[in-house]
Length: 107
Image 1 (tube, rainbow, N blue to C red):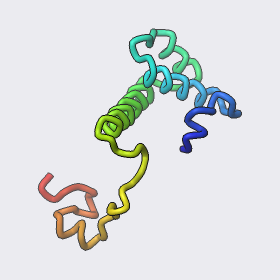
Image 2: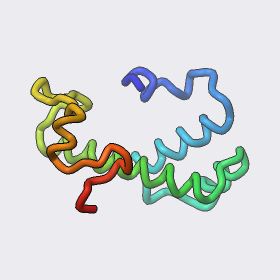
Image 3: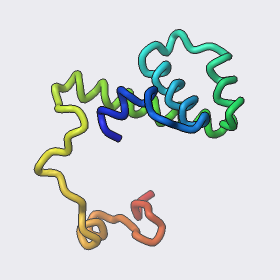
Image 4: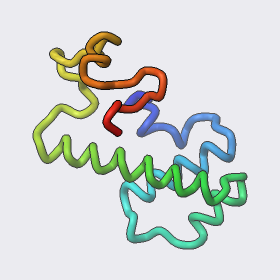
């Protein structure tokens, strides 16, 4: 998602389900204390069920937390450090990651 989309999504041609979720995400991000039953009802009306609403809320909250941590730490938002890299399969194996179960072997 680009910064442009994040700020201009209300002007985009989006389906009702996506539009409702983005409106909810915006309100949860900018004014969470103003959430009301009608905000959740708007999601249900376009097809979001309780589990999906819960999962969306958890993801939105996680991204809000990480964004605030970036801001408070002085990190540039949404930038991967130049020293970051994916671990190779061999490196993952050395660290105890089981590729078959997708978990750490000590988990």
